[in-house]
Length: 509
Image 1 (cartoon, rainbow, N blue to C red):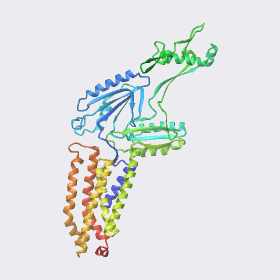
Image 2 (image 1 turned 90 degrees about the horizontal axis):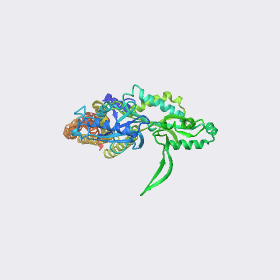
Image 3 (image 1 turned 180 degrees about the vertical axis):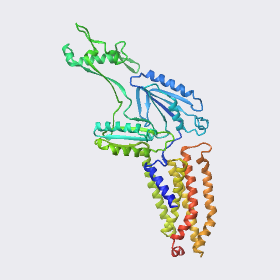
Image 4 (image 1 turned 90 degrees about the vertical axis):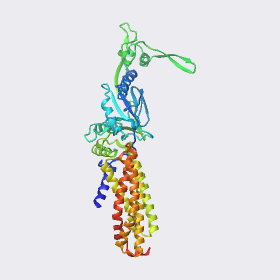
């Protein structure tokens, strides 16, 4: 009994703190019915190329057959991330793929039909063109919880933030303990764009009697065209621009003459220094400080939880934090949601146990007997933790709610047993005979309560007729918690009553 209790407490403590991934803790799982295939092309790729690549990829997805795909929608030039923020660029796009109903799915792991395992197969089968980046992620139903793991680097020193962000990106993508478990790693600095920057050669411009401002105006006119008027078509106002023929991108404008000169015309490239580079699409701040956020999801079947990943990141940060004094880490995503929810539910659960204790203390006029009855909650906790650990199921928000339901049932069983022991003892039976008679008399009602509830939840726990990540985890908690608590209650509660209840206290009731 003591060994089981210590084992259960250690497993739960290490798992919820993230120090060991003994239990997969995910408060907000989902049975996914749609997934997204996101494409990011190199900077400079046109929207038409992006669209054609998405079209070809959609054809490959549809060719897999009706057991794996219902429909595919494609969108070029925009993308929506996990936080429902939209991004626009010519070199991005995504496919929204609807999965068949549960009873019609025929994934590679049929009959399990695990959608997350199928997404791993999709990643391996869809090969984007060279230089393109592919991400496959499930679309969550209901409110967004962000990515499984979200690490925010924030600080007043911009260089320190960028330096720490670079180190963290390398750690998350290359660390041996994490790289096989994380997928779709990216930051929130947007998609890279190719930038042409023209810097006017001021001395050369003045030598030819033209101001640098005029050179800049001429350069902008060649590249973007010059506004020459407006045209109104019903309620729509259209700008009229005069553009140089043949200029499709800035690189084509370099040989176009801007100034006529007796020696020869001066071209755009001769009057400007041209800088070509790539830069991030967005820069973000958090509470007024520069911030870079990295997000990633856990691969299907990973034994790591978001808390375990955060623990590894915190350990690494402690080793390098002295190198970046102007930056620090902040965690969000599912990890932060899980911690907030767990803390709130834990406080509510403790408060409920205190209220139950007060009611029982008033009823029994004793401080010890309510503790004996509430020990059945510990018995159920042992079964729940060991049951989830052995079956390798997921601990979810529904699992915590099921714990509350199990608590009510097992407390009721222990209450009935202790009440009957008190009645038999007050009737004059010796202590041992009172305990044995109460167990014989109340055995059938207690077992029937456990048996009927367990049999009701057993098909759901076994995944019959179809497995459910959300409801299967809840059913596992009911079955494991009730079975262990019932078995231990019938043996431990009478023994605890005999050891802890004074003779005079019980006779006086």
